[in-house]
Length: 214
Ligand code: AMP
Picture (cartoon, rainbow, N blue to C red):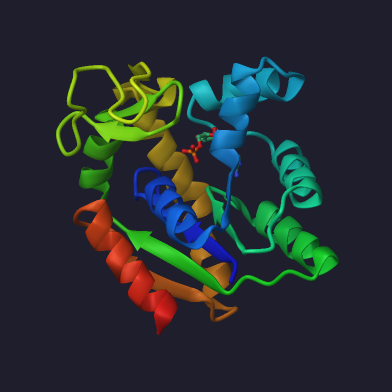
Protein backbone atom coordinates (compact mmCIF):
# COMPACT_ATOMS: atom_id res chain seq x y z
CA UNK A 1 0.00 0.00 0.00
CA UNK A 2 1.36 3.40 -1.01
CA UNK A 3 -0.01 6.48 0.74
CA UNK A 4 -0.02 10.17 0.07
CA UNK A 5 -0.43 12.47 3.07
CA UNK A 6 -2.11 15.67 2.12
CA UNK A 7 -2.91 18.73 4.19
CA UNK A 8 -1.62 22.15 5.24
CA UNK A 9 1.71 22.75 6.96
CA UNK A 10 1.34 21.73 10.61
CA UNK A 11 -1.46 19.23 9.97
CA UNK A 12 0.73 16.39 11.30
CA UNK A 13 1.82 14.74 8.04
CA UNK A 14 5.40 14.21 9.21
CA UNK A 15 4.39 12.90 12.64
CA UNK A 16 1.84 10.46 11.20
CA UNK A 17 4.32 9.34 8.54
CA UNK A 18 6.90 8.54 11.23
CA UNK A 19 4.33 6.47 13.13
CA UNK A 20 3.44 4.53 9.98
CA UNK A 21 7.13 3.92 9.26
CA UNK A 22 7.60 2.63 12.80
CA UNK A 23 4.58 0.29 12.70
CA UNK A 24 4.54 -0.79 9.05
CA UNK A 25 8.13 -0.33 7.83
CA UNK A 26 7.08 1.80 4.88
CA UNK A 27 9.51 4.17 3.16
CA UNK A 28 8.94 7.81 4.15
CA UNK A 29 9.49 10.24 1.29
CA UNK A 30 9.32 13.80 2.63
CA UNK A 31 10.49 16.42 0.14
CA UNK A 32 10.91 18.94 3.00
CA UNK A 33 13.23 16.51 4.86
CA UNK A 34 15.14 15.80 1.65
CA UNK A 35 15.69 19.51 1.02
CA UNK A 36 16.78 20.06 4.65
CA UNK A 37 19.21 17.13 4.38
CA UNK A 38 20.70 18.72 1.25
CA UNK A 39 20.99 22.08 3.00
CA UNK A 40 22.76 20.43 5.94
CA UNK A 41 25.20 18.73 3.55
CA UNK A 42 25.65 21.97 1.60
CA UNK A 43 24.91 20.32 -1.76
CA UNK A 44 24.11 22.44 -4.86
CA UNK A 45 20.48 21.27 -4.57
CA UNK A 46 20.38 22.40 -0.94
CA UNK A 47 21.85 25.79 -1.81
CA UNK A 48 19.22 26.26 -4.50
CA UNK A 49 16.34 25.22 -2.23
CA UNK A 50 17.38 27.24 0.84
CA UNK A 51 16.32 30.70 -0.39
CA UNK A 52 12.84 29.49 -1.29
CA UNK A 53 12.39 27.58 1.96
CA UNK A 54 13.56 30.42 4.21
CA UNK A 55 11.03 32.68 2.51
CA UNK A 56 8.21 30.12 2.89
CA UNK A 57 7.94 29.73 -0.91
CA UNK A 58 7.97 26.56 -2.97
CA UNK A 59 11.11 25.18 -4.56
CA UNK A 60 10.61 25.06 -8.38
CA UNK A 61 8.68 22.06 -9.69
CA UNK A 62 11.47 20.80 -11.96
CA UNK A 63 13.97 20.70 -9.09
CA UNK A 64 11.49 18.95 -6.79
CA UNK A 65 10.41 16.40 -9.39
CA UNK A 66 14.01 15.49 -10.27
CA UNK A 67 14.77 14.91 -6.62
CA UNK A 68 11.74 12.65 -6.15
CA UNK A 69 12.54 10.71 -9.32
CA UNK A 70 16.01 10.07 -7.93
CA UNK A 71 14.51 8.68 -4.70
CA UNK A 72 12.26 6.31 -6.65
CA UNK A 73 15.32 5.10 -8.58
CA UNK A 74 17.36 4.36 -5.47
CA UNK A 75 15.10 3.67 -2.48
CA UNK A 76 13.70 0.34 -1.33
CA UNK A 77 9.94 0.82 -1.47
CA UNK A 78 9.05 -2.87 -1.32
CA UNK A 79 6.98 -2.34 1.88
CA UNK A 80 5.20 0.62 0.34
CA UNK A 81 5.94 4.33 0.53
CA UNK A 82 4.45 7.42 2.10
CA UNK A 83 4.59 10.70 0.25
CA UNK A 84 4.67 13.63 2.67
CA UNK A 85 4.67 17.20 1.38
CA UNK A 86 4.73 16.11 -2.25
CA UNK A 87 3.08 16.81 -4.63
CA UNK A 88 2.31 20.43 -3.78
CA UNK A 89 1.35 21.80 -7.21
CA UNK A 90 -0.61 20.52 -10.21
CA UNK A 91 2.56 20.08 -12.37
CA UNK A 92 4.07 18.04 -9.51
CA UNK A 93 0.93 15.87 -9.30
CA UNK A 94 1.05 15.29 -13.05
CA UNK A 95 4.77 14.54 -12.87
CA UNK A 96 4.10 12.09 -10.07
CA UNK A 97 1.46 10.32 -12.16
CA UNK A 98 4.04 9.85 -14.92
CA UNK A 99 6.64 8.60 -12.46
CA UNK A 100 4.22 6.12 -10.91
CA UNK A 101 3.22 4.80 -14.28
CA UNK A 102 6.85 4.42 -15.34
CA UNK A 103 7.65 2.44 -12.18
CA UNK A 104 4.32 0.54 -12.16
CA UNK A 105 3.48 1.90 -8.69
CA UNK A 106 0.00 2.85 -7.53
CA UNK A 107 -1.32 5.22 -4.89
CA UNK A 108 -3.68 3.32 -2.60
CA UNK A 109 -4.94 6.22 -0.47
CA UNK A 110 -4.67 9.96 -0.29
CA UNK A 111 -5.19 10.89 3.35
CA UNK A 112 -6.24 14.47 3.92
CA UNK A 113 -5.51 15.64 7.46
CA UNK A 114 -8.05 18.27 8.45
CA UNK A 115 -6.93 20.93 10.95
CA UNK A 116 -8.36 24.47 11.31
CA UNK A 117 -6.01 27.31 10.34
CA UNK A 118 -5.83 28.96 13.80
CA UNK A 119 -4.57 25.69 15.29
CA UNK A 120 -1.96 25.30 12.53
CA UNK A 121 -0.22 28.57 13.42
CA UNK A 122 0.24 27.51 17.06
CA UNK A 123 1.45 24.05 16.06
CA UNK A 124 4.05 25.43 13.64
CA UNK A 125 5.47 28.29 15.71
CA UNK A 126 5.72 26.06 18.82
CA UNK A 127 7.43 23.18 17.00
CA UNK A 128 10.98 22.26 17.96
CA UNK A 129 13.04 19.64 16.12
CA UNK A 130 16.09 17.64 17.18
CA UNK A 131 19.19 18.55 15.17
CA UNK A 132 20.55 15.02 15.50
CA UNK A 133 17.65 12.57 15.12
CA UNK A 134 14.83 14.75 13.76
CA UNK A 135 12.42 13.95 16.64
CA UNK A 136 9.67 16.55 16.85
CA UNK A 137 8.52 18.33 20.04
CA UNK A 138 6.18 21.18 20.84
CA UNK A 139 6.78 23.77 23.53
CA UNK A 140 3.23 23.35 24.89
CA UNK A 141 1.69 20.10 23.73
CA UNK A 142 4.82 17.92 23.76
CA UNK A 143 7.61 19.66 25.66
CA UNK A 144 10.92 17.84 26.09
CA UNK A 145 11.80 16.75 29.63
CA UNK A 146 14.82 19.07 29.62
CA UNK A 147 14.48 22.45 27.95
CA UNK A 148 16.11 22.48 24.49
CA UNK A 149 17.29 18.86 24.73
CA UNK A 150 15.91 15.87 22.81
CA UNK A 151 14.34 13.13 24.97
CA UNK A 152 15.36 10.46 22.44
CA UNK A 153 19.06 11.18 21.86
CA UNK A 154 19.94 14.27 23.95
CA UNK A 155 20.56 16.22 20.72
CA UNK A 156 20.00 19.95 20.54
CA UNK A 157 16.47 21.15 19.72
CA UNK A 158 15.99 24.01 17.29
CA UNK A 159 13.19 25.95 15.66
CA UNK A 160 13.05 25.54 11.87
CA UNK A 161 13.74 28.93 10.29
CA UNK A 162 10.48 28.63 8.33
CA UNK A 163 8.49 27.99 11.53
CA UNK A 164 9.05 31.60 12.67
CA UNK A 165 5.90 33.72 13.02
CA UNK A 166 6.69 35.88 9.96
CA UNK A 167 7.24 32.93 7.58
CA UNK A 168 4.35 30.73 8.79
CA UNK A 169 1.74 33.15 7.39
CA UNK A 170 3.35 33.02 3.94
CA UNK A 171 3.52 29.21 4.03
CA UNK A 172 -0.18 28.92 4.82
CA UNK A 173 -1.06 31.38 2.04
CA UNK A 174 1.16 29.56 -0.47
CA UNK A 175 -0.51 26.29 0.55
CA UNK A 176 -4.02 27.72 0.05
CA UNK A 177 -3.16 29.09 -3.36
CA UNK A 178 -1.10 26.25 -4.83
CA UNK A 179 -1.74 23.06 -2.92
CA UNK A 180 -5.29 23.12 -1.55
CA UNK A 181 -6.74 22.90 -5.11
CA UNK A 182 -4.93 19.57 -5.56
CA UNK A 183 -7.46 17.95 -3.26
CA UNK A 184 -10.00 17.92 -6.08
CA UNK A 185 -7.35 16.43 -8.42
CA UNK A 186 -7.28 13.35 -6.19
CA UNK A 187 -11.00 13.44 -5.38
CA UNK A 188 -11.65 12.98 -9.09
CA UNK A 189 -9.55 9.83 -8.92
CA UNK A 190 -11.69 8.67 -5.96
CA UNK A 191 -8.69 8.37 -3.66
CA UNK A 192 -9.26 10.97 -0.92
CA UNK A 193 -10.07 10.02 2.68
CA UNK A 194 -10.61 12.87 5.15
CA UNK A 195 -9.18 12.32 8.61
CA UNK A 196 -9.71 14.60 11.60
CA UNK A 197 -6.22 15.83 12.47
CA UNK A 198 -7.16 17.25 15.88
CA UNK A 199 -6.12 15.56 19.09
CA UNK A 200 -2.93 13.80 20.14
CA UNK A 201 -0.64 12.13 17.60
CA UNK A 202 -1.78 8.76 18.97
CA UNK A 203 -5.46 9.60 18.55
CA UNK A 204 -4.96 10.73 14.95
CA UNK A 205 -2.87 7.65 14.23
CA UNK A 206 -5.69 5.46 15.58
CA UNK A 207 -8.06 7.03 13.03
CA UNK A 208 -5.58 6.41 10.22
CA UNK A 209 -4.99 2.79 11.23
CA UNK A 210 -8.76 2.19 11.37
CA UNK A 211 -9.06 3.60 7.89
CA UNK A 212 -6.20 1.55 6.49
CA UNK A 213 -7.61 -1.63 8.03
CA UNK A 214 -11.13 -1.00 6.75
P1 AMP B 1 7.80 20.77 4.77
O1 AMP B 1 8.90 20.17 5.60
O2 AMP B 1 7.02 19.77 4.00
O3 AMP B 1 6.94 21.72 5.58
O4 AMP B 1 8.52 21.68 3.67
C1 AMP B 1 9.33 22.79 4.04
C2 AMP B 1 9.62 23.65 2.82
O5 AMP B 1 10.34 22.89 1.84
C3 AMP B 1 8.40 24.17 2.08
O6 AMP B 1 7.86 25.34 2.66
C4 AMP B 1 9.01 24.44 0.69
O7 AMP B 1 9.81 25.61 0.70
C5 AMP B 1 9.94 23.26 0.53
N1 AMP B 1 9.22 22.11 -0.07
C6 AMP B 1 8.97 20.90 0.49
N2 AMP B 1 8.30 20.10 -0.34
C7 AMP B 1 8.12 20.82 -1.48
C8 AMP B 1 7.47 20.55 -2.71
N3 AMP B 1 6.85 19.38 -2.93
N4 AMP B 1 7.49 21.51 -3.66
C9 AMP B 1 8.10 22.68 -3.46
N5 AMP B 1 8.71 23.02 -2.31
C10 AMP B 1 8.72 22.10 -1.33
